[in-house]
Image (cartoon, rainbow, N blue to C red):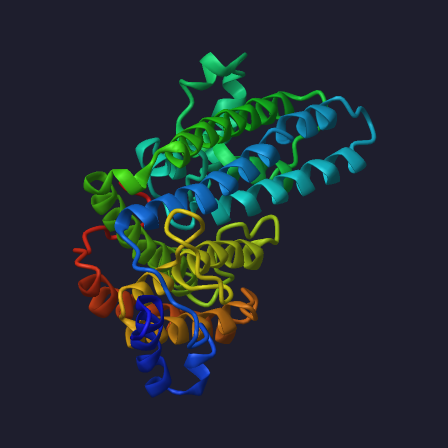
Amino acid sequence: MTPPVLRLAIRLALPLLLAGTAVAQVIPAHVAVPFYTPGAFMQGVYRHWYAPRADDFAVQAAKLGPALEQLCASGGNPTAAQQSARRQWQATVQAWDTLSAVAVGPLVQRRSLRQIDFTPTRAELIERAIRAAPADAQAMERVGAPAKGLPALEWLLWTQPALPETPACRYAVLVAQGVDDEARALALAFAEQARRNWLEDEPAAVPAMSELVNQWVGGIERLRWAAMEKPQRAAGGKTPAYPRAASGTTSQSWRAQWRGLQALGVAADNAVPQPGEGLVPLETYLRGRGLNPLAATLARSAADAGREMSRVDPAEPTRVNAATRPLATLKRLAEAQLAPALEVNIGFSDADGD
């Protein structure tokens, strides 16, 4: 009599073999893929993706304020301190863009994207806030989100570089402290979600997984349309106002967002974690449900998008267009096939939860 695990392996491997050799190489035919529940999925994403990424962001954000304080105290030769602050801003943004690519749970509840990544940058509001000279975090609560957060710091480090011992520099330190506060709050909130036993709370896991699938689709669209295609169309032949353009880190930001989308969408290797013991991307979840042809289609579509994202260049419109097309295809696949297969209704129009 054939052992149950082997029967499961044969049943799950057969569609892979029928789909072709290239797809069969994703997960070897002899590997049995467990049946995953929404609880296993949510436990995996919170413990093995969101909590570590939130910690990474908090570590980088904690260094922003001190870097800017050094700039403010650097006297008549701020060049080295300015470069150090810029590098720290870039490291913080990379961690943030990866974490926030798919905004779920605390990111939505705290409206973090609006609080610390409001775009487009409102220069006049930043200048007004500087003139108001807020003295501390309590005073900063009266300053609107468009004049705070990571885009405001980009403006203060590149567009209108804050000089040492100026109100602008002191304001930049307070903005950085606000980013640090939000990063620490997110790290604590995601740690709480990671400690939760989602395997024993399926009633809560089902809507949580539905939110994630919605926000994954929304994250693809936010990257494709809001970050890439919309600025290009609005430029009218001029230089597009892409996010992170002032710092020259647009392509790095796009790729960081794609890393977040990719990690939650498709398997990075042949790993097949046991329920609750590792990250279960959507592709692996589908395979655990015996939906191998759809999983293979999802993997191929993501691979097409990843190939173009690896060479996207904001200075070359043809490469931007080449990247947006497979992103659009991936979004349509998720809406038309992935969501119905998972019994998820697509309801969000973008990934910020507003």
